[in-house]
Structures are given as C-alpha cells and as structure tokens.
Length: 477
Image (cartoon, rainbow, N blue to C red; front, side, top):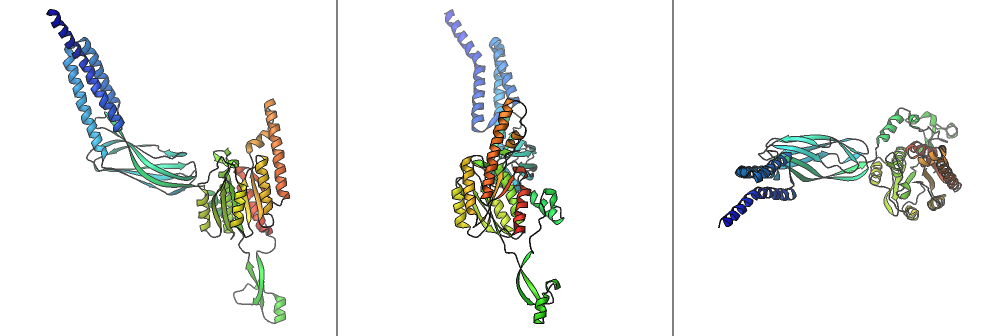
C-alpha cells in the first residue's frame, strides 16, 4: 500500500516538474505561428523573457517549492505578450496610408528626389522604420528612415535616388517595420505602391554642347569647326529688288541688262536624312567602367542626333539584334529628340547573334530616300565582320553608309604593353594579330565606299560629330 502511494506521489511530482516545460511549449508554438502568419517577430526583450522563464523552469525541477512562482511567471509572460501582440497587430492592420512623390523620368547617374509620406490614422503611437522600394542597380541615400508617428499624424521623408542603369523600372512596394508598445514584438508590413520610372541616358552632354556652341568653344569637347565648301545656300532664281533685300545680293549684270534692280534669290539646303542602326547583339555586350558598348554608342548617337536636328536634318533610329526591336522614322523638329530617347532608353545588349540581313531589309523597305546610314557595332570575328562589310558596302550608291567600329581598350593595351614575362608576350602577340586583322577589315570597308569612325567607346562622341559635320561641309549627301 505504501509503495503504491509513493509511486503515485512520484508520478505527480514528475508531472508538476514538467508543467513549466509545457508552459514554455505553449509560449513557443503561438510564437512560431504568429511569426509565420502575421509576420510578427520577437525582439530581444521577448527572447530575454523566454530565457528567464527557461531558467525558472530548470530551477523548479530541483526546487519544487518554487513551482508556483515559476508557473505564475510563465502565465504573466503569456498574458503580457498576448496583450502586446494584439496591440501592435490591431494598431498596424489598418489606418496606415503611404504615398510617394517621384518623377516619372530621370537621367542615368543623376540623383533625383523621392519623397515618401506615411500617415497614421489609428489611435496608437507607432514607432519603427520605413524603407522604400529600390530597383536593382540603384542607390538610395539614406536607405531607410526611422519614424515616430503620433495618433492621427503623418511624417514625410526624403531620399536621393541615383539610377545606375537605364531602362524602364517599377517601384512596387513600401516596407514598414513597427515595434509593439512594450517592444516585445516587431511587425513587418509590405504595402503595394506601384510607380513607374524611366531612366534615360544622361543628356547633360546636350546642354554642354549647346552652351559651348553659343560661346564658340566647341573645341573644348573635341568638336572641330569645319569650313563648308561653297555657299550656305543655293541659287534659286532672279527677281526684282525689294526694300527688305540685302544689297549684297544685287546682280549688277542682270540689273544693267534689264535696267531694273535685280537680286539673286537663294534657297536653303534641303533637309537631309540620318538613320542610326544600333547593334544590340552579342558584339555590344562588353563593358567598360560599368557601361556596355551599346551604352556608349547610344550616348554618342543621341549627341549626333541632337547636332543633326539643330542643323535642320531629319534623324531616325533602328535598334536590332536577332530581330528589329524599335524603329523611329526620320523626322525633324525638337519633338524627334524625345522620340529617339524613348525608343533607345530601354534597349540592352543581348547574348544573341545579330541578324544584319533583317535589319538592312527592314531599312530598305521603310527608308527609300537617300540617307546617311550610321551602323554602330563591333567586329570580333570573321563572320560578323563579313556581314558588316557586305551589307554596308551594298548600300553605296543608294545611301551614304558609315560604320562606327568601337575599339576594345583591353585589346589595345595588351598589344601596347608586352613586357612582364612569357605569358604577357604571348598575350601581346595574340592581341597584335587580332588588331592586324581588324585593320584589314577597316580597309575593306573603306574600299567598299564606307565612311569610318574608329574610336574607343568613351571617346566616341567627338569623332562621330566631327565626321557628320565634315559630311555636311562637303555635301556628300
């Protein structure tokens, strides 16, 4: 009988000693469920409370007299944590509104202002952090903001957003993180707030060109002044003199013959046409200083387009790789610059073989008037160099072809600095062999009547503009 009573007492004692562990389990399970379901995570204070209850449960195993106190401590922690949980969950589940002020377009590498407004329509003071969406390749200063929102209050935070890539992007959401009133819980909320942002190439060079052109200092950016052959205008007809005519246009021989003042009337040069063909295939994927060959070619093409439009010419553009991605028919006027920007800002080099046949066939079908056709590409093997030579050479006669061949600076540096060891000598010899082959390709293009611009990507703008101005001066079109 005594043994039975003793056994029952021992079983009850073991059950009592296990009860604190069961209480901890009851605390941990809701904690995991809350973190998964409501994105509520424990803070350091909550972990400290669990450590205290854990130590109390261990002590109660060896000191059964403390069992009641440990049980009360566990219950108190559960009640306080539950109240704090409900407070932050209810307070942040509704009544929070966010709005964003940001420009719809910006330039590559130029910081823009982005303002985020968070409004608290609840009756709870909210303390936490807010972080706006950040597309890949962008930098934000600061990255996140700390905030304290009183009941029915609002706060506006500003940041500088610097785009490191051009193209079309979307800012999808705003991320908020709030602390509970007792700082036992931290809740993360994602609020959808879509905004579109178009990043265009940096057009600061356009304003620099316009400023230097007005002050007659274009030589500072490498643009040469080219003397035009002949007159700026072509003779059209003779007519009677009027009071507003320039006396220098009087034709004295005709005046003597007619016995009446006669002047020469001139007509302005007709608008000429320029069409850019931008290769967006694998030849343009090489990068230098964070920019691809296509980035450099696009920037220089836009600069030349700006100059051509101010010269009164019509400018168009065709972007292609394994297919034609975009085509802007040649037009004049200030609005054409915006069309070119919008067509080229989201074009990126693709790891595909460029289909020159499709691009030139599309050009043939959509551009029938004589034009200056500028192909920006790179030659690295016999296959693509033969295609470039054949298709540009076949344009001679109907169009005026120009090839913009971009240099690989690494290749030229390897050939120029062969010293250092056997491996560098072999490397320099290989680079020199490629450069000899490349020079032969350029000569073949010249023999086919193709104009050439051969330059490093980061030094392309000035030679390209100079070549265009020389074409205008010699009336090659």
